[in-house]
Amino acid sequence: MGLLTIDEQKCGKDGFCGRECPAAIIHFSEARVPTVLPSEEARCMDCGHCVAVCPHDALRHARISAEGSPAIKPELVIGAEQAEQFLRSRRSVRRYHTKPVEREKVRRLVEVARYAPTAGNGQPVEWLVTSDRDRLRRIGGMTVDWIRGLAKIPQAVEAAPYLPAAVAAWDAGDDSVLRGAPTLVTAIAPEAARIGTIDVALALSYLDVFAQTLGLGTCWAGLVAGALAESAELRAEVGVPEGYTHFYPLMLGYPAVRYHRTPERKAPRIRFMD
Image (cartoon, rainbow, N blue to C red; front, side, top):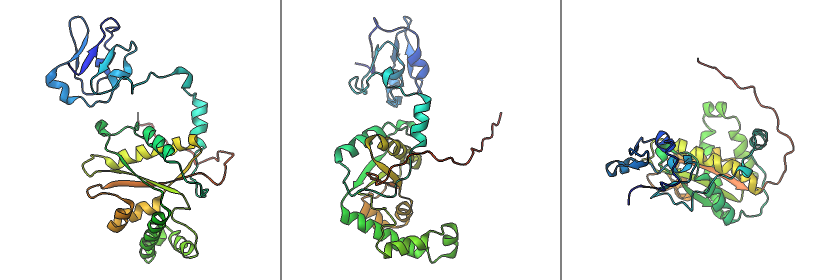
């Protein structure tokens, strides 16, 4: 059996699948039926464009299950105004309830986040989830230790004047690193991922915005990210394996506050270079 199976009774012979194939490996017989030569199957990226673009449901891909490729439901497509409000209303949450985040919800978030685009459809992103309070406290403490050293450098404080305040707050008993979030989600990718930093950021962005729909809030943990980049000990505590050089953590939990408006931001700076 080849890579593609075509229901010739359904096939519209319109060539959509061939034109959309990023690898340009779909060819057509004299009868306009799509096919992939065995010698070219290895070039397929398993992106699913051919499956997604066929309006006749006539094409099956050997490595992409039909059951896992549901049809787009028109009744679930959101309009531009809904999408704009949804995206504008997303906020960084820095106060959380102590209620734990259910593992089922974390799984659902990651299931959605895996549909974020990745370079060459490599899908290198993996996930580390930390909910143990003692471990979260150690991660926060190790991050503060890194900040203490950074705060001794005048140039660093000039660039990030909040650093001494973060240390003082931690010493006073306030979690200035993870903000009391009950869960830390860290997206990681191996060094071999060509642009793994971008892959990780895109996957986290999907998880970040979808979290709102489950009643959850998020905040990108920049202080932890900085410390992770320089501390092998902290990477071990978070669970980042050797050889994984792309990573970023995200706080996750149930927000302790609600937001009711979408404040204005700076006007965009756009240059049309045509």
